[in-house]
Length: 151
Image (cartoon, rainbow, N blue to C red; front, side):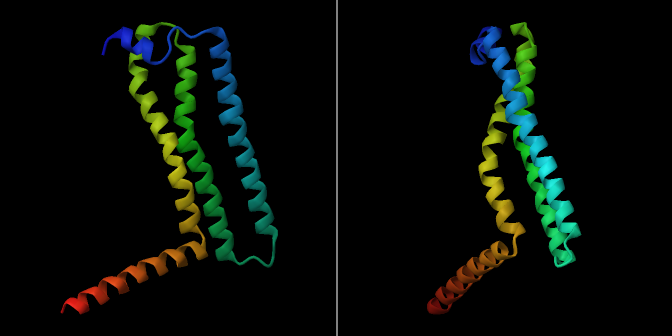
């Protein structure tokens, strides 16, 4: 891939306004939400631990869910924001070629979050797991009845 195509692909040279917007996007769009989630989750975990009526199993399940949601945020949105910040800091187009594919992969990873969060909620809650089990059993029964009709 030529340097010219890399420069055109990721909008080089970057204007000062766009550079400031990228830094603001990193702080307001990633750092602040990550810190809010971290402190909110910590507060929720503290409240649940101090609640005498919550069973230990439920406490662990909630703690695991909150941890996975925070890790999900960091895993899916961290790379794209870090790549955007790196893109802002690099001034020479020739140094950007190595950023192109990781940047595109990080964008794809951020889009996968819309699949990951519902799956986390579904498999981490008791009701969600029961619903998944019912769907699986339904299809197993359907498959078995079709097989018996053929035989």
